[in-house]
Image 1 (cartoon, helix red, strand yellow):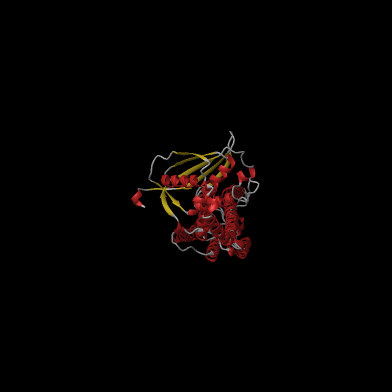
Image 2 (image 1 turned 90 degrees about the vertical axis):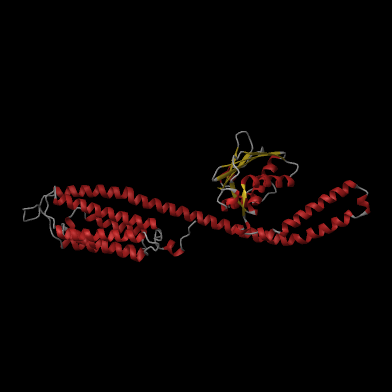
Amino acid sequence: MQYWPMDTLQDPALPLNSRRFLRGILAVRNAVVLVAVVVIILASGPMDLDVPKLPMAVIIGFMIISGLTRQRRLAKPDLPDQSQVFLEMAADVLALTALFYFTGGATNPFVWFFLFPAIISALLLSKSQSRAMAALTVICYSFLLFFYEPIHERGTPHPDNSFGTHIMGMWLGFVLSAGFVAIIVAGLVERLRKHDRVLNEAREQALRDENMISLGTLAAGAAHDLGTPLGTLAILSTELQDDPVVKEHPELAEKLGLMREQVARCKETLSVFSNKAGAARAESGKAMSVRGYLQDLVNEWKDMNPDTDLDLRITGRFDSAWLFVEPTLTQALHNLMDNAADASFERITVKSGWSETKLTIKIIDTGPGISQEIAENPGRKMLSTKKSGMGVGLYLATSTIQRLGGRLVLSNLPEGGTMAHVTLPVFCSEPGGR
């Protein structure tokens, strides 16, 4: 995702470091030149008006060469800044002024072309530049009120006093201006809206990252605080297993053994927690075959949840699909499976399939379902359906899947239960081609 500098967001309406916007400005400008050429051809041809051809040819030639020069510059890596764009638009305004000077000045029905640079500068340039452009167009229009070469039909020494041509030109000007508003301005406004949506998504992502950092800091502190009591429990359980009284009760010894295993698992988790807390680094991930990863994922979860029946259905048809795997991804999927197991108590279903570009994992439970708020915005807030839950697991799972380019969708099934639909990007190659 691309982030715009803050000074760009506060001053101009749109960033000009995008090649697309500069090409849009050039397209509007070239359209104006094309209309001017067509009108001059019609005026000197079918309308039989006495148009000075040499000045017109020089001005139009300058505008065409200028447009080609800008087109070539846009093909280069370095783009012009706002000041250069403003100067180029100012040159176009002066060229239009010269064009109108030889074609009736302010009486020319197409003098409204001055609105183009004024509107574009207001949309794309800074406030000071847009005001300067508006002032320049007003000055040029005012100049043409008093200084211009009148046009008239060939063989007529004075301008045509009839307004038929002028009215027709005004009608055509209205049609063109309406088309400009409907197509060009509407397109620019839509780009503004898209730009705002990108900014909103960036802000939401920044808030999620801030929450993740806060969670990582708190979790690291909790891990440090838990180290000492877990170590004490490990020592006490070891001493109890050596107690003669415990040895006389095999069931008690078995329970103490299970306690030691769970404490050891907690200590092992805490020992690597510092590497998992916060934002995961790219070098901690690796590429794994999709089929192999799913089998490892499910087997590891079964070892931690032996009392839950898991129905695994893998429908992938080829083994050349690979997935970029991080420790946080496994933890995220385990969180979703834990939530399903807590809701179903006895049985959950995991369905998985993949194509050449996408892996799909569906985790289905038979529980009571989830609220509409959680289903519509999974992971936006720390919400939980459990009485003692904090919603951290779903929040972390959503953030991890989105960071890896995937998506998580939660939905209630018509027959009852909830489905967590996870999609992740994959790539295909031969095992030795990675």
